[in-house]
Image 1 (cartoon, rainbow, N blue to C red):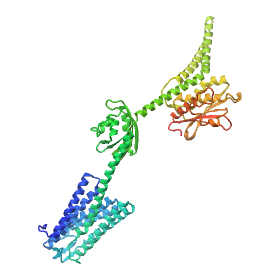
Image 2 (image 1 turned 120 degrees about the vertical axis):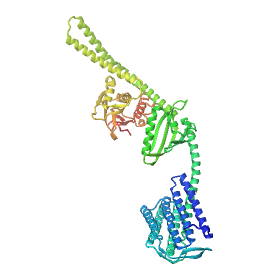
Image 3 (image 1 turned 180 degrees about the vertical axis):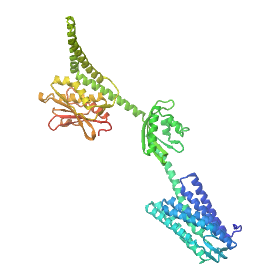
Image 4 (image 1 turned 60 degrees about the horizontal axis):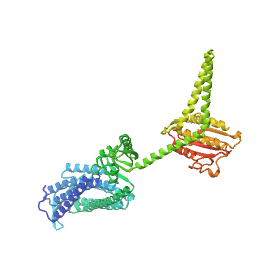
Length: 618
């Protein structure tokens, strides 16, 4: 078997078609090499190369010199035909994104069987015998066709494989037409329709040739030329659309960078496969990274403050594992610059399980906000401290009385001990009792002084679990003397079994102390029998704990309900209007709430809602 060296213009035409197919195949194969995700281009290159092989085999058969050579060309014709079937089916699957897998694998398996039988049969799978060939005129040239022959027993396999390809392509095209957009529906019609017509026409014509109904060459090449051009057109259209989309994305990226820069936001993207970072100019300026070194992930991470590096790495690792959004605030230490606070928000994407593809994010310099926040917290601490000092100023006479009582008792016991020693009559039991009284009164005085010192001391917030009953008892100890001097009956109703609240003991004591003193002021105009203030607690909604102070006063006036927590608003002639405002601020800083409401039977109740372990206040 020899490839003819002297071709007629029929051979030249077929060769030109084959050369064009090879060129298309090379172009799309090169595109796949550059973009490995373009697998439809790889499938098309297989179709194009196989199509060129089919054209070459047809030309060889047209110029065969005897029956044996013609039969050999038919045998080799099945090798590119296998690639043509396989490439077409895979292209439809990849390009349309539809098609039943079992049909695809059945088709591949059947064509593989045909290929094996073809090279095992003599002269080929289509014929069991080729007795003669004929020379006929075709397109102005003389070509060789089969004369007398006997179809092979395995011939029906080729017919079945063609029907399978038709069913597979139609099924895939209909599925994409039903679910796709306008472009996808057009592609389904164009590719599905041309492949369907090609297979039907080529199969029918081939069967006519094999069974001797017509004396013509196998003409798969002209039949398959329309679907080849349709596939190339659709891929080219996709490339054109991708190019247009790339230009639009470039323009959108410039607009986004301009908008982000105006908002002092920096955009960045980390490619986990190449360990490279792409970042906007604003992002590089925020981080203090030059354009030359901005692509190195290591250079960015080196600038993160050592105390925050582990936490930031842990947050991003969690996002990589879950594929969810992440958010973190951290410090950076640029070369030769002061430490700055950065806020980052973004999302991680993965290609394969456990392998990061991209991490995108937005950077924002929040140093000014953090400084303002720190200053606000410091001002709040100063205001709370001033509020505590003011409260203790109101209680000064009562607290002085509280201290003078144990100090006076200590003095009297000390004088009694001195008299006992001067008498010369030493009664050890009585002396022990005097010393025990002195120690008890000393502890009592020390406790009062410790409470005062704790309340007056400026300190950082210390959040810890606190018993609601113990907190109320601390407040009772501070105001009991003042309540007695004013004739107010102060009562604490314990609630055992409540979970501890979370908060700063001193600040929460300040809130309750403020509320209790307001309650005592409210009942002063009532008859002595109704001068009652009760401290109690309960479990509120959503497992919250509420610390309550109830009084028998006139209640909250209708016009004051929405104003009592405003700064500098007061109903007292000598009040400053800061107590409840500070108290609510402290409650909210603890994730809680301070509210006041009238009771149906008269009086008012203020409730301090505080979170417990794992439970917040709404």
